[in-house]
Length: 347
Image (cartoon, rainbow, N blue to C red):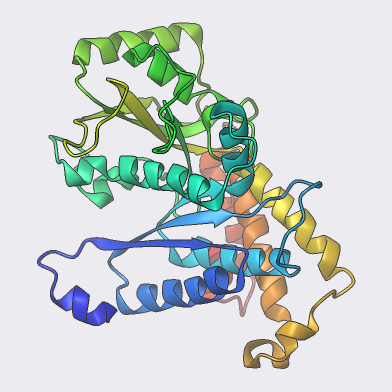
């Protein structure tokens, strides 16, 4: 089916995959699709919207093997995807309760938040302008190195379709761009107060004067609301887009932030802690031994953990001024050792 649709496309640019990383279907089937797409279309861009599970200590998961599934899937996201938009269940629930005043958010209401972000992300593709009008151009400036391709999102003002009420009253360009940098509006349960931004893209929707954008950027710079990486030039990129003519909104201006931030390491670290906790005693491991992939050995688990740990360390290293030379010394030592494979040197 995918081959048929690809052959019928006039100008195939890439693929967008939506899945969760904790459940059996989202992680297993999603990982299989990722590997097959990367194998059949190696030159096409693959972007995913990946829903990460709750990692808080007081939350109980319906899937007991959630840490195993997450680590195995995150390895595939690192190796086979070009851009991963992280949507965190913990953060989505927090936004629904704290920002939208919904005491017990339903799955449909949380999905509405996800669809709002997805629609805003593709706005510049569906209503093309003079820039950011293709998928490659949209993500190329956000990803400095191939493995550091996990993006966080923020959106304001948030309004659910079935409850047209919002705590946000002022929607000037400055207010929208300022709120986008606040942790409470970010859909990842990691604090942006720690670490620094690698890259930021703000998509502003509505009738906006470019001079307002310039003034807003100047105010943000003067107040030092955003901390950037020390090893390269970085700034807030802004793309202006018009709103959909088919959807009525209560606010004149709305904004989406796509950002690459080093606090992603916090998310990976939490998943590694949960994984180590049950892997140490080999809990529920028999479920996997029945599969041909794990029948002989469990090396795939250890390899997946190492890949996730390397990405976690890379995000932490991006906060240092010497990030440009990160990994070069180890790679040089690996080249000197006989019998080292190309994959080991690259990692």
